[in-house]
Length: 408
Image 1 (spheres, helix red, strand yellow):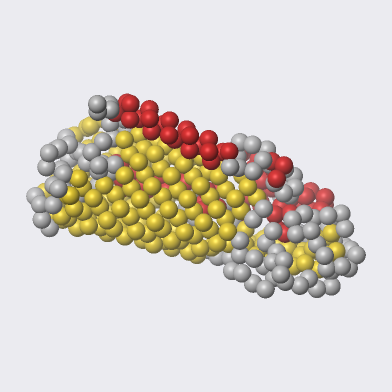
Image 2 (cartoon, helix red, strand yellow):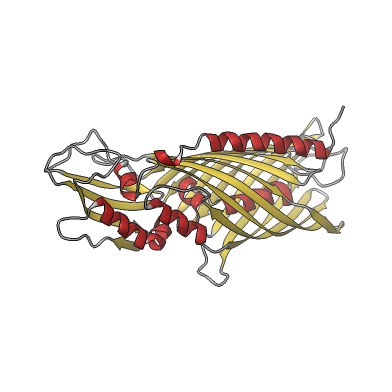
């Protein structure tokens, strides 16, 4: 017996809840966290390299920020605890850079104790948060901001829909039932491989999306590792709308989303929640062999770290939680040309820009260009295969995707 849209939605949400539970269960407890930022930086050290004259030097990258960190052992020995600063250790240098910005710790004579360095981190938590997470937690750990990624996927795959010819047995709107995408991002001292999939339930106005990324931090050197930052994200959104004009298929609606992001980087593991909402519109018109469409989404979003983190890292989490709602505006267009009754060539364009609302705007200005070929398999199921190029404040991304409407 065929399932109704509501039953499909309930089943999908049940699967989503199981995924969220499994993700949360894999997070390491707070006791496994480092006791501070200094401990996390020690994890960048390459243990196979020699330590000279009782001094350990770390020069690496953490979440896209460049960090120089030096520790001296008072005993003069070259043996260090690779995961934790101890009472015999003295921090002799700490400098963090991102772009043209630079913050240096004015180290006291003889070096700073671990407690003194933790006090510095707490006192400068707001500034350090801006170095490590200038846009959002999700952008720093995965190369792509969760809010922007949602806006782009929503506009391309739901609001503006697939750009293939309309299904011959169904004259209504055509939306993507499924998406699989592979993406390679680089720049800003980082390189990222990411996979994501989308599951769209048209009748319930509900979408589910999952994304896994593996980000290489900096370049491996003789003294410093280039560790991997791994993240797993799951999100869902609800996007009801009303039809304003059927001639141009003009729709206006609202969008509400929430998601969970789990990250493991160096010796730091934590989870964060991303949520937001906004208003959207889309329009589309067919002219014989040509299809034109456009869409727009204005949304506000926020990241929140819901659990306690040990040591001075908690002060950074508190700064993230206190940040104002970030606003961004995404808009795009599509054009398709029907080569045959079943095949079309398509082009899509989208931009996302931060919107300043009382505070300095956050987030990169992102531009996406896409090209694809769509085909109606059996004259019924549209499948779209294409290439996507993305630029965002120094980051470049190349991606390939497959999407289609499977007739939910």
